[in-house]
Length: 33
Image (cartoon, rainbow, N blue to C red; front, top):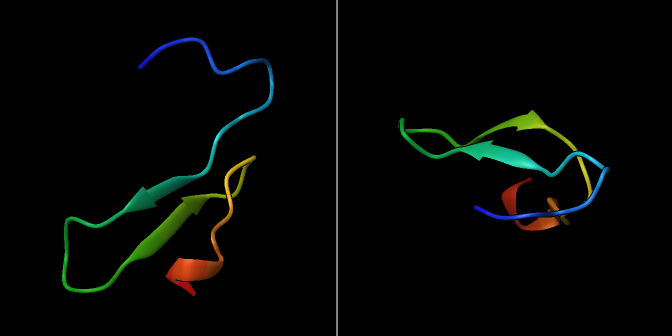
């Protein structure tokens, strides 16, 4: 981790069989759609 500003980041869960977008934030999530 580290400082990433005040805006929330994108959180993706890859622990199961399907990828789940848990939170949309600053990071691009198009690759996980």
